[in-house]
Length: 371
Image (cartoon, rainbow, N blue to C red; front, side):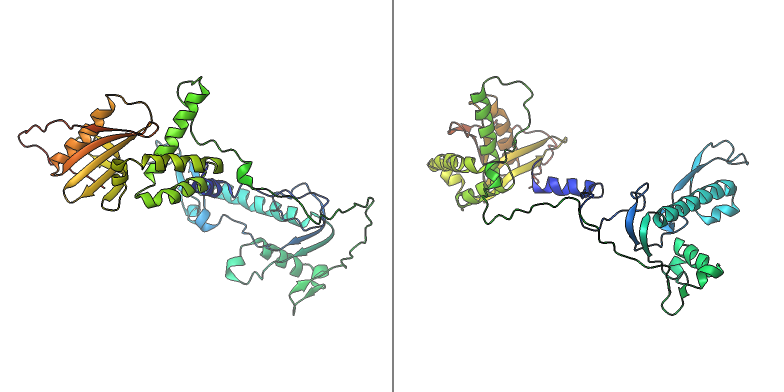
C-alpha cells in the first residue's frame, strides 16, 4: 500500500535494521556498536557506556533446551527451561554452567574489542561498580584491574575517579587533495507530486489487452472510492483532497474526478440521496443469521424509511439486482420501509430494484443489523 499508515507499519518493523552510511573520509564522529566495530581501527575512540553485564539480563534470560537422564525427565526428551542461577541447584546444573561460561566469555571478548580499536587515543566511561546495578558488569573488571595492579593504580586519581596515561595529541594532517566548493545562489525546485507516479490499483486477475478498458475500470474504482468518503454533497471537495493526500489519485486526476461526481449530482434523485435530510451509513456491514455477511455501499435512514444504494462501475446487468433485493428484504423484515437502487457510476444510470416478497416461517429468527 502507498498510504501513511502502511509506511508507519513498515517503519516500526524495520527502523532498527536501517542505518545511515557515512563516507569514511567525512570529518565527523562515527557511531558504532562494539559488534560493528570488530576488525576496524580508528584514530580515536570513545566508549561512552562501558557497563554491559557479564551475564544474561534477568528480564532477557533465554530458554535453554535441556535433557536429563534422571527419573521423571528421562523419557520426556528435550524441554525448555528459563536460564537462571537457580538451575545450579537442579538436575540441569551442567547446562547452566556451560551457558554461563559462554555468555561470560562473549562479554569479555566484547570488552577486548572495545578497548583495542583505537590507534592514538581511547576514552572510556565506566561507572563505579559499587553501584548495585553495575556490580556484575564489565565496569567492575576495569576497576578491579586498575586497583589490583601496582603500576596501574599509581595513575588512578581517587578524587576525580579517573585513570589517565599519556597525552592525546591532535595531529594536523594536511589533505592531499583540495576540493573546490561551489555555492549556488539560486536553484530550481518543482513539486515532487508531479514527478512521482503511484500505482493505485492491484493487478487484475485476467489480462486486459485494451488500455482504454483498463483506464475505464480504474476510473470506476476511483469513483467508487470517492463516493465511499462522501456523506453529503458538501463533502465532495474534501473527499477528493483526502484521496490525493492518501496517494489514491494524482493531482492531474482531481479535476476530472470531481467533475464526474458533480455531473452525477445533477440528477435530482441522486442529489436527494446526498442531502442533509438523511442519516447516512457508508460501507455498512450487515450480519445475517447463519453467518452470511454483506456490505451496503450507502444506506440512508429517516424514521422507518430506508434507501439502499449500491454502486456499480460496469454496464447494467440483471444479476446486480439480486443482492440489492436481498438488502431490501432484510430491512423490510426489520420493520423498515425500504427502497433499493443501483447507481452505475461510469454511465450515470439509476436502476430501481423491486425486493422479493417476504415469506412467513414458523419460529423465524429476528434479523439484526449492525451499523
